[in-house]
Length: 196
Image (tube, rainbow, N blue to C red):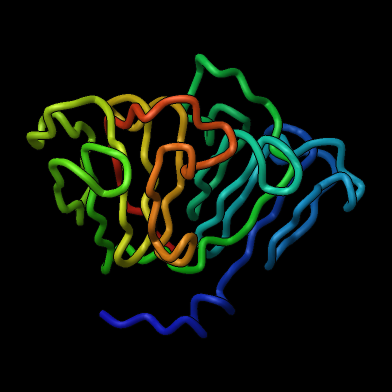
């Protein structure tokens, strides 16, 4: 199924709330926000995504821990944070994921940095890479050919999240440090497609 980018761009809508359970000050967004404090908020504690896919960040200017936000309700921080070990109750910036497409997602993962070593194509959701035959709990590099994925540190879509998009870095993530400003390890054990 072909999804035109003009449709995706006009179909982005998210409401953020300063308090948990959709309480307190709120504001609607259809575009990125690099610092929620510029909009008069101290923090974002709950979110309603009405349309589109978004990525939230722990710090302003799209830095820190990443959180994928797909259509649905997130009444408190642990509804969007996949890592209970890394206790983050803060989301200070966010942006749309324009290339999210559940129908057309394809990525190649590599065992080593710079697209070297053993490789595997990923075009579905994998709650455990080891169960699909990947021999390691680490991924050295990735090339996203189309769509967008969220990669998780642990099996079962848990742990730190890393959003990989075909429109960022031309889809090339040559080293695990390219995954985000908070990445501390190449450990990736589950992957799923991001839906718009």
